[in-house]
Length: 196
Image 1 (cartoon, one colour):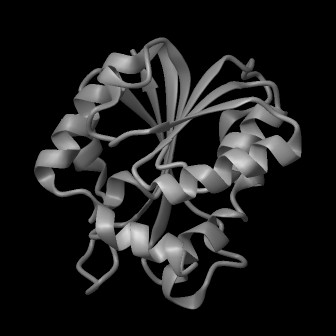
Image 2 (image 1 turned 90 degrees about the vertical axis):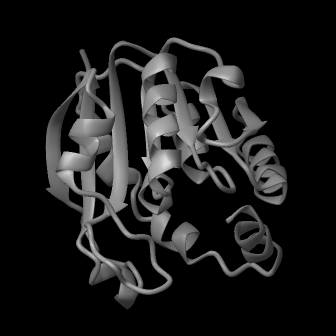
């Protein structure tokens, strides 16, 4: 899977990044006005748009991605935006060895929903290990289904099984305005989980 993403960034065929640019307001709405900025982890941060937005809102942000080219672009964007973001070249299934602990917010815009079962299991354990008590996990994912080259998506029961230390606080339809046509038809969801 890593090679496919590497090639996609090299040839600038990254439709998930264009779609992701419309999520800033949705993320803010999901966090709510009562959320105080703390430490945030952006998993599968790509070229850094969400990590940079969070930093601009006062969060201390770490972004991870397995594609070095995407991280190089993210560092340039953060520098141009005048914000500090720590970008780490890492696999989302090996968080506790690379990013530290005590994150108040964990953001995943389209990473988890493409993983196989073994990767999901490691991811769930890793996210739980790096999260602070009471942390929020915001996850954008396609609804469950088989759609050829697109990710297989996520069901609520997948999250409840893989995140037993978390409460599923919200399962909402994502706003699809501005998303490419094929992405609007895959039941895009926002999940909000809270660490017990």
